[in-house]
Length: 421
Image (cartoon, rainbow, N blue to C red; front, side, top):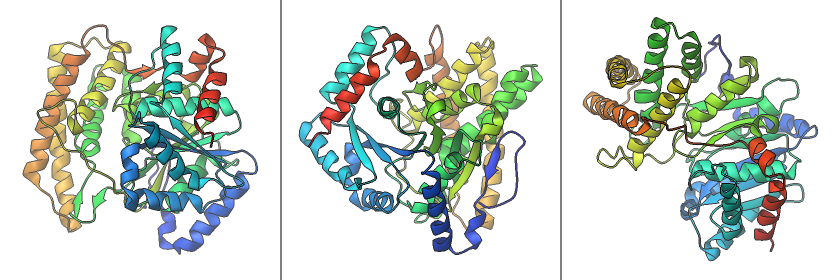
């Protein structure tokens, strides 16, 4: 939502354009990006499951939007969720409608035999490649983009955005693509309101990440852990830390380790924190509202839905703290989860006021029940992260190339061969 507030940590770019004509604003933005693209090439990375092709009312809208712009040099689709050649061919044919005289399109078949053979070669050198999922797919596709060596800016967004429009795409790229700026990483944010239910969404952000991080700031400050307090304060600055939309320079991207579980977004923010000074980081309000598929809580199955998401995110934060000098034990984590829960109840009360004044439905009982589940998931994360376990990160492509100098040649050949007509 548009305001003028600037946090002292990073820059926030607000949606002040909403008071003006949208079509005029879009034309101005796209003309600027076409000028920026004369200085350096821009690449769009689309992580997509094969199953998302079966949802054409959503994906067609996204494809139509991308087809309409002239500033993207290359589109790379990280295709997961299929080992069938016929399905890969179908996906390739579908995404190839994005091709033009000025825009190349490649579909990276992550579960295809050629990419799998390369992943096995990397593993044979005792380098972690993770497991199949969004994180691994994004990492493989990034390797192909770096191997091409002709794009300086990469942007990424999901393929299930119901409310997609070209303004989202333009605003995602502009802060990093603009040569007059000095940003190397841009994180998108937005409001999450279901237009059909007239209710707040984004439960993991609202009821876990934000109140948990908020609690950790106080705990770390009270115990004199200034660096970790700064780390959590940085995470607290982001309005929607779990947003899957961001852009970055390839210079930064080559040095990023990539999480291969559902901690991808918070792990990426942490990697950026470790590698960049704050003035090179920005967040931007992308669209007035954002709607995509919603996950179930999955109280009984820790491998599904919000249960898995919260556990993976919590495991990342717990491992990060331990790796930065905090000797966690059962008593400390027990204190953390009770502090988090009490803080969440305060947040829930504020959310209820916000919902009421905006005419939204708000189920106070369900929100509190969800917070109780998340509290339990936090303890599950602690049980699973005990011992000599490291964060589930795939090493950066700089690291892989150091040990495997011919890797770019191999991945180029694999992707190009798969994409031959």
